[in-house]
Image (cartoon, rainbow over all chains, first blue to last red):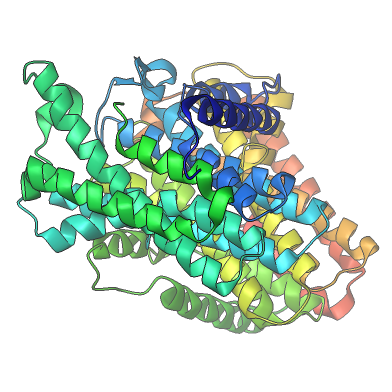
Length: 302
Length: 302
């Protein structure tokens, strides 16, 4: 068997999402302190029905390598916090100016812009607090924990996600080169999809050979995810009779579709997904969940 | 001798500011990569003529305790990055809506709001990258470095600076209690003025007794700094014939002056400064710079 069937897959991902949600509940609890509003705003977005793809990848790589889930969980949650902060700031009027995300009002629409900016800042900062606290409180290899933290910080920073966002901003209403598109997505979306795999591998004591496979797997997964996103955007627009909503209506953005066309984008997606899958083949049966996840991600409809 | 004379003090603080600026130049260099704009925006604010009070406190406590300056410097710079990010976000239209800071246009006035939000995010993230990178690359006590990093992260987060900012936001145009004012300032300004002292003490291997004196010193310094700021705001307004500019014109904010009155605020400032000074007396001659700094801070005119 190389892939899980629907039932096995759903049971596994469901249990991991539950574990992640419980830990996030513990890490960002309701509070009755003078600054309680910030916790409310953070919680509004972190519990907004996210798919938890990043923490799930983190826990799945940990299981695949026989790592200790308790050691990996805070890192998985920290990555989800970083992802969520980036969404809050991305939705702001000065950025994409979106009123809705996942069918709910965006953070600044509910709490106001000032609090939304601070809630984003707070989620980013809390991500680091959580990882550091965990590293200080638990036994085990501190260099490993610090290396994992650092990999996440790099993925979130100017040579990762933030760098990609800047290139994205500057590419608006312009025709960009293929190289710029790749670079932008590798940083903007790819880095934070690769980070959970890499961090979990570091924390699970992966060998050099395993690490290089997992890094490649992370790169390909990030790329596949983005191409699929671009395809979904167009198919979604077609389904709604071409009506553009939200940021798409205001800004022209380059995507895989505008640069490669739909047919070539689908071919690319297929190629990249197969490459991601190949990276996992050497891990045998323990890779079944991740291999299934990749195919689900790349054929997903939302 | 208990305090430095003008010349000694200036020589010392001047050389530390130079060291900090050189290190910041190394940590946030100009780049010619696709995301180069973000570095420009970060550099615009980090090299905007800040007084470098936080990193100077960090290096001064390190020297007082005989610590290793090279080990403390990245932490000192990280705190300055966090301070600078908070100013960029504070100045945004949705927050204080300030057009000028230190006589120059604010970040969003030069780079636009979207880039300013990202530049703030990037400075916060880079602060953590820098500390982690340093901890991983250098010999020495890793628990100590992680503990110092964590103290800084806590000071910057929801139980520190961000928490204080939220309380501040919610206190606008309201009459607040003394307890709320204290809490707000302890978090908003105090935490990030205490953090450099505490981080340097941790990194320099302070004893428990030294640590508790330095923590108290940090608390009192933060408080004194804020009271002096509030006094300066009023005296500045009086000097400009009561004309209010910038955020003061738009929002009513509670300060030490509005709650205690000018005379009592000055008495409080004096009391708190004396207490900060007392904490340092046991450190003998090595505390001369810091004791001088405190008196300068609390009688400063800008």
